[in-house]
Each structure stands twice: as structure tokens, then as C-alpha cells.
Image 1 (cartoon, rainbow, N blue to C red):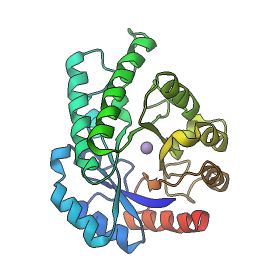
Image 2 (cartoon, rainbow, N blue to C red):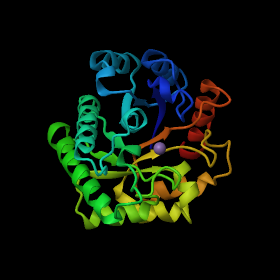
Image 3 (tube, rainbow, N blue to C red):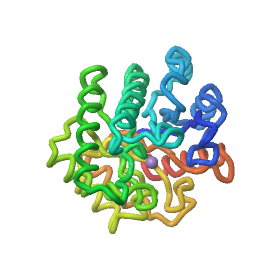
Length: 271
Ligand SMILES: [Mn+2]
């Protein structure tokens, strides 16, 4: 397993669960100093990340790009793949496709988390799920065709979405809809709220897990909350997971302390 730390470029998400907020150069510099393998970037739009700048920062520091988030499409515009409004869905698709291109050029996948949307009260769950399946299918095919990377889909806790909250229901749905090239992002903060048993959830989702958000129960660095992380890591090892443990956490008590605590836990748990 490899380590990653988040860099947020969205000023509206300054209070969000991201470790670094002072630009790509600063985030990459801190990531390499603290020993991370990769960075995960959360941009306002794909166009706001210069491919050449990011590529040269990664090369210069021997870092990889772990993934790129699309949450700003929801945060700034309320665009989602399951919206009843076809124009909104189209905007969502284009926004995500642009991020697939920007991340894919650097060998990394895009994440669909909050852009999955929510079911509004006057619509059926099936209708929203069908729209979501159509969107994910198109985008995952595109990611494969254009860049040979998967598309990451993240179940969220109940306070953020009513579509998918747990790994197993997500895995079953992806399988039954034959949504190929979509991998599950297992976020340990959401899992702590929703799963009955985090280890079992990981073992059941198995090879469908493509990325992990490495966060303790309170969305602080691993070691600062009450999640029993040792069995979670053992389960990830047992399914042969070799992807990233990426710190999507609040920068508390400050960014460097959160990153340092993450790296200390990573070394202890993963070796
Ligand atoms: Mn997450």
C-alpha cells in the first residue's frame, strides 16, 4: 500500500477535510518532506490545474498523483449525475470528463463522491439510480478508453447522500449493473458511521476496492480518533489491496501535524 495526502485548491472548501490548502507547489513540497508517495488533488475545475505545472512538480519531487476529486462540481454548482434535470446531468458529465482527462494524463483516476447527488423526495430511488448508472457507465468507459484508468466511486455517509452509504450495497449494485471499470473508494470516515464491521465490509467488497480515504472516526489523522485501524489494514492486506491510503482529513491541529500523524500511523500499520 502507498501513502497519499490531499491538496485542496478550492477556496470555498477551505474548512473542508483536506490537509493542504496553499497551492500545488506548497502541498507537493510538504508531501515529499514528510515522506508521502503521492498527492490527491481537489481542484475547482480541471482547467484550474495546469497539467505541465503539476507534471513538473510531481517529477521534481518523485511524487505520483493518487487521484483527483470532483466534489467542487457539487459544492460550487450542485451538479450531479443523478439530477432529474438533463442539463444538470450533462454539466456534471462534462465536468467529470474534464477531470478524468486532467488526472488520466498523469495516470490517475477521478473520484465521483458528492457528484453522485441525492434522491429528492418526489422521485423514486430507481429513477435516480438508473441515471447514476448511465452516467457512471459512460464516464468509466471513457476513462478506460482514453487513459486506461478506472473511475472511483465513493459511498458517502447518510448525512451527505441517500444513494449509497455502505461498501457491500455499492459492490452489489456495480456488479448487478455490470458497471465495468468502476472501482469503489472506501472512505474510513464514512465507513465508521455506516458499516457494522469495517473489516468485513472491506473483505466483501474485495477486489472492487480501488482507493482508500485514510481517516479516523472523527475525520482527523489516523491515531487521533477511536477507529480500531489494525484489523482494517489487515483486511486490506488480505484482499491484496495495493493502492493508496490517502489522508482526506481535517488539517488539525494544523496541516503539517495532521500529515505527520498520518505518516507515523502509516509506517506503524503498513510498514
Ligand atoms: Mn472521502
